[in-house]
Amino acid sequence: MSLSRRAWLGKVLQGLGLSALVSHRPVAARAAGNDPSSNESGPLIARVTRPYDAETPVREFTSFLTPNHRFFVRSHFGPPAPELITEANWKLRVGGLTDQPLELTLKDLAQFERVTITAVVQCSGNGRAFHRPKVPGVQWERGAVGNAQWTGVRLRDVLAKAGLRRNAKHVQFKGADRPVVSSVPLFVRSIPLEKALHPDTMLAYEMNGRPLPLLHGAPLRVITPGWMADSCIKWLTDITVQAEEAKGYYMQTAYRVPVTAIQPNSGLPGTSMVPVEAMVVKSLIVSPVNDGQVGLVPVTIQGVAWSGEASVATVELSFDEGKTWEPARFVGEDERYAWRRWQYVWKPKGPGSVAILSRATDAEGQVQPQSTPWNPSGFLWNGWDRVTVTVQA
Amino acid sequence: MMTFSRVILSALVLGLPGLAVDTSAQEDDLASVSAALAPRAEGLIIARCSVCHSPDLVSQQRLPKDRWMATVDKMKHWGAEISNDESDLLVRYLSARYHPGAPDHLPPFDSELRKAEPLTQEPVQAGPLVGVAVRGAGIFEHNCQACHGAGAIGGMGPKLAKNPILKHEDLFWETVLYGRGPMPAWGSVLSQQDIADIHAWLLAR
Image (cartoon, rainbow over all chains, first blue to last red; front, side, top):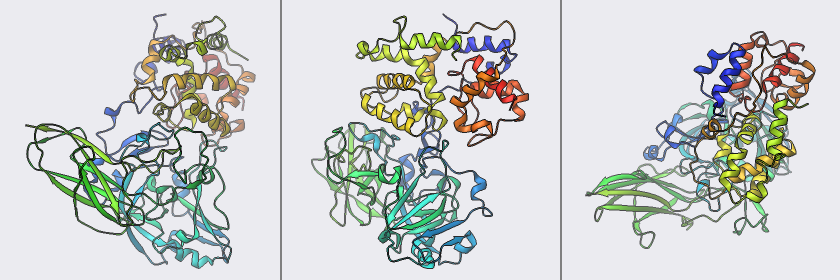
């Protein structure tokens, strides 16, 4: 049978008077995502076309703030229908173990004190592609992270207005996004009350001075500074104060890591699993770019580094596969939950290929390891960053 | 009820003529397993999996067979319309093509599909297809209802009962065969007769 599938479809459709449709329409049954050349020149690198998941090319991280349109995008179901979150239709419900349940509009939220925090937001699965053995999930590499200025209200101010009952222990969040098929569990998660009442935990309605974009959770999202983004629920509509952790797949099964290291693919971990919460110390080499070329002249290596709730203490570089390390110096803004930019002036010794490694250490003594302990869902990757460049004579 | 093409396909897949099917004995020969199963399996990925997510989420994974099984089971549990035969086929195909040792970048599967035999080798009809509404009800329920709702009254996807597109048959066929927006393409899974049957059933809603 030499007839191609398309030609065959054309023949069939001719019988239906549809041949014109076939001749100039692409075959829709095309798999996206396997061709890196198709998406690395845009503002974001798409990992999943629908629902849209995309990471930032690391070269964009030379600026302190990551612009909204270059900020990584991740959700389980994609944004909700826009009419659900228009100012006229959207409300935030606060209930559960409260004295007085609330229903707040955006105007009501504007009555609370306005606060601004610059914070790193990072997908729990950032770097998943580097775990060995490979694990299932979106194969994020280095760019499912960004640093933005978030403006909104303190979660604890909203909770105080509702009044917490004595048995309140966890605060659950639900957004307006919904799965295609109603049998898929909703993305519902909770954080412990202590984090919810932290003065820096906020409900953000602005990102980098602009109204929160639809892809980033308009009109309101949770920001838990220092914690991974699985707590930063987007399109927020429901806050429920509870005695227990949220029920359901995304809290009880997903977004969990073993307490102690386990053998890869050893079946279900014999250790208990705990929710992914604080970020771990991590650095990225931003410039020069991987597979780039530099001249045989002094080269300024630039990068960023951040940790969870502690500040970054040092960043070091190695040019000999980690045998010796040289300290980089910090430059620019120093804010508690933001990343820190760093630089190092490197004098290449001669032409050829060189691997540049970076590792950060935070104020609590946490050191970025050569590679991260394997875990079944590939969370919290923070292995040494590596960029290979060619030094030209 | 099976169309003629479905019978042929089932024969190929289930190995009645001993063609593509003796995969348990061929598991070392990943490439041949992959090629033999590709048209049907990729059609299933487009029709069943991409109701909720694009196929690129599938093709970027590199997993051993047990993890593929767990993944397909999870998706069935969450409501993916996959029969037991279909999930066996999917797991065989996925663990042959997207195994841990497979290269990071595989060619998009549609280039292989083009080389493959056409999926549904129906004879070109002498006249227009005549849809049978009573068959269409069952095909709709299995393939379309998850998004378009029971009775086609709408859900995540638009309401189709009394939808004007039913009167524009060319648009209807184009949408079903190639997809539109979030709707996946169904040309690899539904036969021409299936689509005509669904159309006939929808017209009667």
